[in-house]
Length: 431
Image (cartoon, rainbow, N blue to C red; front, side, top):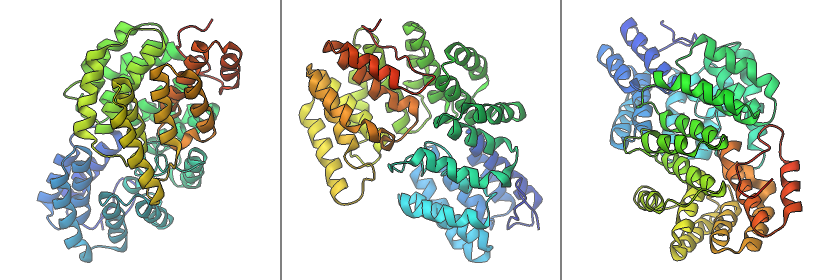
């Protein structure tokens, strides 16, 4: 029986199918384009190889091709009765994921990795801040992710894929000394690893190493295919570093060319969140509003995200509507979220509605109301989903509201109480 790169048996006897499958999995794990083609070659070599079909389904999902995803899933399911117990469990995880059953998918992952802890493709669905734990909307999800990966670490040793994820999770809870060697080892082993580059960008942000972040991203990004799923988001990180350094024009060039470009290949919500958050942070830093860019984002949000359901996207949609002054649209958006909360289908609870209304209040100039709304939800801000770098936008808004209200003592206390590292925020009016 043939095995994959992690020593797990695969249900094909054709070496060429196994090799192409391993290549496809590695492309998914490194967030490089081309995985679907690799899985196609595996399928040509062995049409009955169920895991190759489910791998292609995952690649199709990530490239925004739901029809191909469903077709490949159906084929994998039809072949699963010929496979091993691992095949059946592996495919079941993805069946839940593709059906939008996040809670069931995460439960299935936990069961699966108890038996097959080195099934990296399954683990990848829950191993990062954008995965099923990181986006769960639950309190304690940052520490929960670290705990989950800590338990699995002995199974992986210094594996380049695992260490990038483990390192970033540690970085997000402030364990920078433990995070750095893991992330640096990952990059040293496989530099063409977009997730490791992503983890290093976050580490630089969390430790306040802005200039190191700029230098690294300027060196690393030219070798990354712009069709890669993290191309836009990594350029957002560079743009954020540039903004922190006072280089707005450099950030805007990246905005135009990479993370709000028409050929952006990342997830729909990623393009919206990266673009809107950059423009809002630029305004908080004292730069004038670019109405044309905001109008384009409003059209994009209406077309691509017509209804709420994913917290990280939802509060960025709310930000776009608040800037546009479409109070009715925003209130309808908030009401739709609250209906999901009442139905028990929105784990973030009331956090996103509070943030949405804070954006509206800030936009209207009612800074006292914005302050009250943000202060009330800050203890639960991790439930918004995403990384600390992303959620920092809310504290930056609060800082600007304090300053506009003449509440300088509270502004200083906010900065003093922030976690070490990214203590300074590029907000106008603070000396």
